[in-house]
Length: 461
Image (cartoon, rainbow, N blue to C red; front, side, top):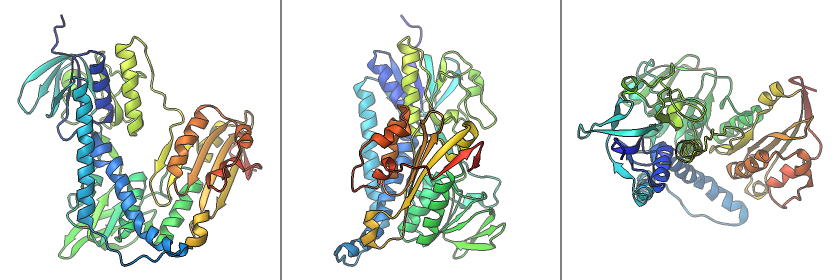
């Protein structure tokens, strides 16, 4: 008979925590999971899912414009922000219900309260003050937007969290940041008719992506009408009678209705009682774990963004499944972080898997780079000037494709399938042997027979 109240207690009801709790409960373990806000976590409640719904909404004005080139006459159109927010909220509520239904079906106990560690085996439920014990504890509390507290006037700004719940659609917005969250929201707001400015301290947006895609997206965004200020930062935000004023380092003063800070995310560990339980964190507050997601305290694990490894929902779910194998199936399993497909739901979209040209140039003695830039078939009648970019990075010695990068419509969908291809270790010869599917944009991936250029010792030759 166990001396603990639970075999497993999970703190955090996001994708990783829910998956770990549900599967452990389905294996017959006595499981409880606690969430202080809403089940579903960042991805479902205030991240990937509502963001993608907003992306779809923001694309319709271009669809209406494109229709004319194909013989359609589209009547007067208008957009209702409140209707979009209400529809999004209804879908999020539906998904949250499915998360809870899955947990309940597996007989996990669902607790709607904040939970804090008292010691290595004891958790306090703050809603009632009750304490419970567990043999194993998983911390999966995710991350939160960095508030950039050093910025004077930061309290006047919103984060991506609040962007989903604005009372009214602003006429103008200034977004600070150059990562995928900043870039995606710049495209969303612009697509919904908001005058949009993106300000970023670096030389080019999306710092960890392939250089060709970064430049290509930047040019496309500017062509649409988004103002991008690189090599610049906000110095101060202040309130005026008719809105906000942003003082910048290099671009003077900007007047706007809303300022959004998208300057990274911090691990959500504050006030969790980690010190009381002896759990070690790094300088950013991220929980330090070993290769099996175990903390320095033997019975406590941590999954997902709270560990600041790879901040992606499927990664948190994968880490949860590895935890189940390790802890409950006597099969120690390390999460696999190699060749993770990634998408930026900008407009146009980015889909990527594997190494960028810059990264690959540091790892391999010689590379072949296959690159195609073209106007997609749809644009020939719609009249759009946007171009797609497709790029394959090949290790010359082994012929293995070590990176694949796409800028254009449905790039994320293509990147998912390319992820399988690269994970299988396919070579450029495998691509060449594959029959093209015509007419598609993706056929370019298997019809680039001659390298565009080579990289030797990190230099283009």
